[in-house]
Amino acid sequence: METPTLRHSVVAGKFYPRDAESLREEVRAYISQAPEQEPVRAFGCICPHAGYMYSGHVAGAVFARLDVPELCIVLCPNHTGMGRALAIMSEGAWETPLGEVPIDSTLAAALKQRCPALREDSAAHRAEHATEVELPFLQLRQPRLGFVPIALGTGQFDVLEQLGLGLAETISAQKQAVLIVASSDMNHYESDAATRVKDHQAIERILTLDARGLYDVVTQQEISMCGFGPAVVMLTAARALGAKSAELVKYATSGDISGDRDMVVGYAGVIVT
Image (cartoon, rainbow, N blue to C red):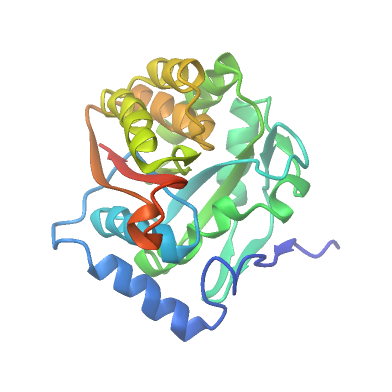
């Protein structure tokens, strides 16, 4: 009998603390910085995935607003170039310093059945940080968390749209709520001023739930939003599931922390309800 896959953390001690108690305290601090509001049940969200020093306060603001269900789908870009273009993991668990997060194999199987372009592939996830950095926030907000990771290495709109529609069909057939987390940073390595202009062009489309508009503005204006694919998929699915609005919870750039305004990365936190 095969042993279920355990995907070990690869950026603990780099993007966030390796020590469990230090990590727990840091994540709680980022969540507690957000204004106190009643958590909302959302269809999806967009959350940054940089080192916590730079984007943890934005991620904390997002997760503080969410009533995180026991099931999540985490969509991330494929930064490494390894593996399949639409890569899913269906078995096993992911490790963080806070413990193991099980993959929900039932939900994963349903997704593969409705989305035949998805391929079983752990290689695309092995060294990819963009899903891993979301998990400690999700773990603290939902101790009974189960999830399905999907890494996207394609920028073709039709493929992304079909995946989003497939996710919506799968989620609508579930008996319990499912949150779609789109892991994405915004524009990369331009000045703070240029990044803010570009990012708000993209955010404008996100806030109108316009997946095609987001795709067009990112590609036409050369906005280096690494997770525009996950965002397109999430917005497509959320619209199909009945989403009516989106809220920009927090926006920042790395320059707000480093003080370097010449070359920054943008971070947007959005919830879709």
